[in-house]
Length: 312
Image (cartoon, rainbow, N blue to C red):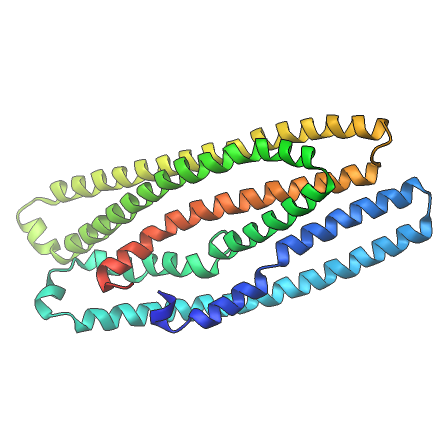
């Protein structure tokens, strides 16, 4: 889609600017915890102050950098929506008049507004493609550092993370994609029914069939609400798995780390460093899972636009 709209090169540049942020932030937090607690154990106040000052400077830089990048993404998002709407209207005007007449007004409005927002959101909003790429980069760096720190603790963390990633990717994501497709279709039908009822109000009241129309609208509203409840339920079930898998892995890592500290193999600072790397793995996995789910939902809007414009 970006290629047809002439926005692919700009988007790749923005994606590269945002790519290292999560991974670098997690690394800074891990290093800070390690060196600050080691300074506390050694009762070295001067070293502790230097570590805290470096941590503060790094966070100020990261905050400024992240805000600047998201400002560029905001401008890109607005322009992408505009380009996409112009593209859709241009494609519609190129169609034969008979084909345009056969299109439902409510369906066209739904694709031009809500579907356009959903399609553009894939590329520029949080918890979509941007966070998916960031999550993968964070996962790779955290995994590498954790592996170098201690292989056994890394593998234990993976054992608790991997099943949830697979369940979310291959069970919840397809279900939510299917539900969003149905929600978009029912929403378009409902908009078309409202439009028809307003445009044909005189005829409806002349033949005294307003109750029939209103009942049809009521049934369609109920169908839409049921689909939205199902979608919310599946998202809640997916979210419930995060603390379940995360807390169990955390407790196992804590007990194993305590044994290593007692044996003098590692320090408290090193254990906290490992906890932060584990947190990086968990947050990266959560970011990837949530992004895949959100993209699956928003792809329903992109699919409907492609059906209307034959966009590649």
